[in-house]
Image (tube, rainbow, N blue to C red; front, side, top):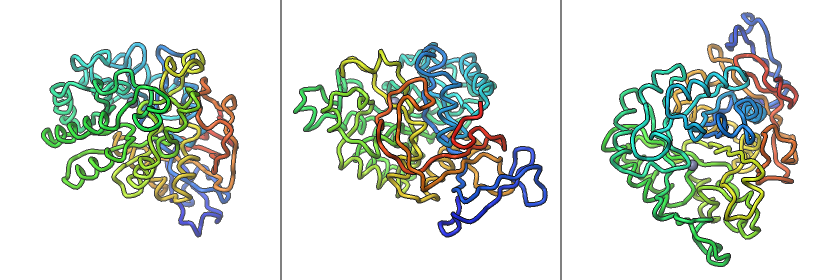
Length: 415
Ligand SMILES: [Zn+2]
């Protein structure tokens, strides 16, 4: 599974023993999928959980609830917390909070540089060796801008096949930027964030990754030009992977014209041409995964004037529905781009596996016929900054299982 389209409505049973899928007859419990679509538990490579530091916006527990309701069984927590996750102590704290919440596996991402300041490397080895076993490192929110530091980071993680996840933004080209640089920014009189600020960093970093022979991952690719650079890099055998967010697959820069800060995000919403290139790149595998960039913000940081609002959008509870909306009911593709591929990139061996005997019982059951209306205050997140308020979306997560334990039952989180 995912089930072939013709068998989707068939009654299929999943046999489980000790949290692992087993053959019929060996189970200590069974789950009747009851005609729902069974997908391997979704994996998010890019989640902001805000704990420690901004527990008013989100906590590991509230974010875990949102994730489970979205069909996820694992999320990678970004390092831009307060304090920054740049030591073994902080990543172990986040890891432990995730285990205590017990709804999804929370895999901390470590910062590349101390304090995300871009000046010296953080304790990458200590974080990798910690109980959190960090394999993904990112200064997300900030670009690792210094090429020498980026090279050293790539060299360092190569030793344990770790990966540097780059927030590709040449800071000198985006000073004061408020939205995509183009026709709309000119019309609205807002400082633009040009596509080349992303593309120039990606071009540099794929060359650095090739030089070092290490793994590079590009966060939230947003432009047609970026897709083309990554396509060429992959054709040359460079070890680069890339993600696209649900919002960059659907929304465009004209929305900034509303001056509603819910549409302010970094990188910014782009043009329809970019959206089409991102969709094509996702389908043909140039872009490996969908990642949410779930970015909860408290009301005072978001419900204010556009220029002062923090960039970012909620994503965990709507990602699968947006994927279905954009890709159709292509369950094979969704299972790959939202589970198998992100698990592989993050080296999460217990996630992203096909639903067959021997695999951990991490899965979600989806009603493909259901439609639901996004109600910001009905979401499990502590924040409400969803750009999809009032939209009617296809597909609904009904049940989610983590190692055979139900985390979502009938659309409700179990703890
Ligand atoms: Zn970012």
